[in-house]
Image (cartoon, rainbow, N blue to C red; front, side, top):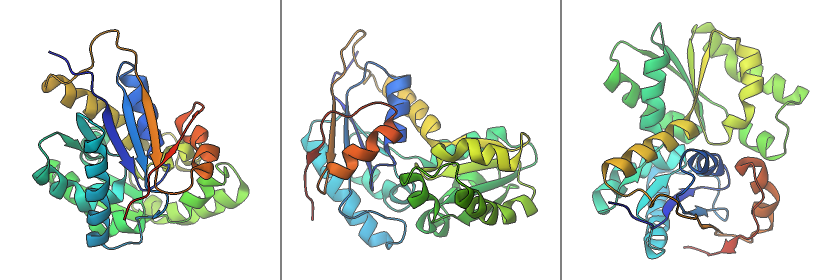
Length: 267
């Protein structure tokens, strides 16, 4: 049993392309329709009801494109909108929090787990709940890192300024002696070399993009939705604002050139 329809992936902007990169790597025969809500980014400082409304609009659009599954490649949207979308949709909806939490629990030796993300993701407590559901005795330390997103989008992944900001953000987590750190924002994988350097080899970094792609593969396999063997994938990219910035920055996150981005305003 197979299904050649595309996977729908959405994010508040371009960071979700790190998830797309991993899906392309792990599932090379799958087609993808990506939507970045660039007109309304960021989601991290918006209220839950607003994020839910935006997520519903995007899910409606992706379903209109004939997708067979939806991946919420945004930690804030996963935290606020995943249960709602799962209740409303017949097709599978996959978020980034649960896969990251499972990987963190499996990796942690001491149960001291750090989570870095946007203010909205950290305040939601989504990772705390997901981790404690798997390991009730875990000690979860959350840290909002709002400056990481603009620094990554500027390409400042190894500048002195970024190092100073990262030192400031990570200091409370070092004080908590975490042995595992969840990168709870899709921009943060681009900072992995710097975070590895600052935290040292004893702290395991959990990349939610890698874990979410693996979860997507499992869901498609379990539901008989995998693309046929040898299928030639077709990838389409949409954004809700003028696409020039998406085109300029997208390659940095995707790891490959994007030839075309289509504009589709919402709201």
